[in-house]
Amino acid sequence: MNEFDRTETDEEDELELEVTVAEPDEHLTDPTPEIQQRIDSLLSGNLGFRKSAEKVREFPHSPGVYLMKDASGVVIYVGKAKNLRSRAGSYFLAAAAQELRTAEWIHEIADIDYMLCSSEVDALLTESRLIKDIQPRYNKDLKDDKTFPYLMITTHEDFPRVEVTRTPKAKGAKLYGPFTSAGQLRGALQVLQRIFQFRTCSLDIEENDPRWEWFRPCLLASIRQCTAPCNKRINKSDYRRDIRRLQTFLEGGSDRLVKQMREEMLEASTKLDFEKAARLRDEIQLLENLGDRGEIDIHAQPEVFYIDPKKGMRALKKVLGMDKEPRVIEGVDIAHLGGSNTVASLVQFLDGLPFKPGYRRYRIQEVKGIDDFRSIHEVISRRFRKLSDEQEAFPDLLMIDGGKGQLSAALAAFRDQDIEPPVIISLAKKEEEIYRPGVSEPIRLGRESFALRLLQYVRDEAHRFAQHYHHLLRQKSTFNDEVKGKKKRP
Image 1 (cartoon, rainbow, N blue to C red):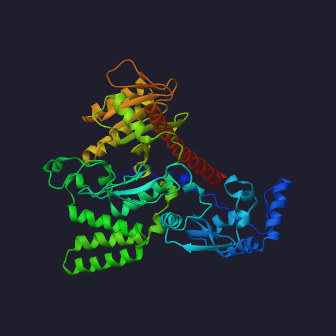
Image 2: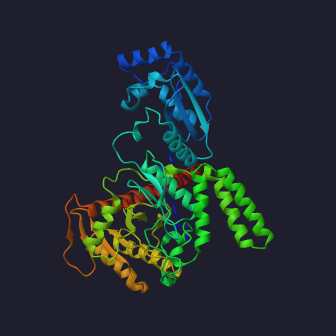
Image 3: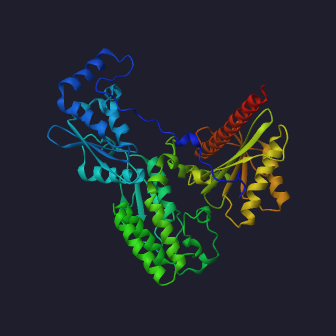
């Protein structure tokens, strides 16, 4: 694999702003007299609050769940944390007394405890279970009139689906949740899918239907995040075994699950089934290292998409006259500064949301100076030549950032490589016009169109990712120039 074709996670998304645990007399800069008086009153007059503030300073810097209690020992709030000390400590700063979400009840805190979790994903699941069981009165997120996300596993199908939903089924499904953050739940789902390799598509797959032998699996099979029952690569019993393992983990039985899998690995090794034993070994390692791999902040998608992504997909199917909803969308953008360090980004959306394991970045190698058309031709040629040679799935929809010229350059790349393109369009930013092959007039959609909003989301993400990579290269180039300059000095 070319070093420029590898998956890259945006480093900015990996940063987490840690909250420093406050000393008992620490406040925000220039708090209002009212807030100042309130914090001083809490710390001096409420012995339980002051002890809790001191107690939290001894919490570990580990993932877990914290439980706030009132003077009678009743749990009034449950929260999760990637770093227990930092997150729980933030409740004893002046900011908590100002924030509407916490200002009304932090004066009731008389004690605080925590539960360690093996990973951030485990903390998310544990928080959900505790809130559901305890029903703390200040976990308002799950008590208002909104519909909150659930993790749903279908039970009536030969090959059960796993999905995030706000409208859970009353029958034929096993539910986990509700959860307070759809974004974090999707992030956790992507992490778990790397281990348990379940399907998330809406296909109606029956084990004895011979048509599935010829079905081409989606990209998740290619990157080993689905065992592809749609292509009969796994039988019903083995797939359901993997689903049972997932359920065991979701229900808090990770230690029991690892023990069970170790026994299966030993049995497979004894029977000389080394392929099965090796797969179990790898899955066990993933589970044991979930704390290292389970960064749901990296995989969680921002909750900025202000419509249902599925509405965007349905609208795109109608607007573009597609046979099916574009479940996999890829967007391409070019970035440069005066023709130097030209780069390309490719972002991938799955079910209307960014799928960061599918992101790629490319350094343009064959183009000198400013030439967006030739740069697009190069990146499309490299991307789809590789997919075609390795018989990997193409996206349902490919979107190029630009107008007629950029679209023509992409089509020329497919023609020169003798590859049949997927559905391909370009989106011109100035008037937000959608260009299609062989059609002179663009599609102009209203600004509130669900289809346009989804395309804008893909385009803006591709632009951000390209600019980020270009910024990294400029920094590296500047650093190298400075080092060379210092070496030349006498």
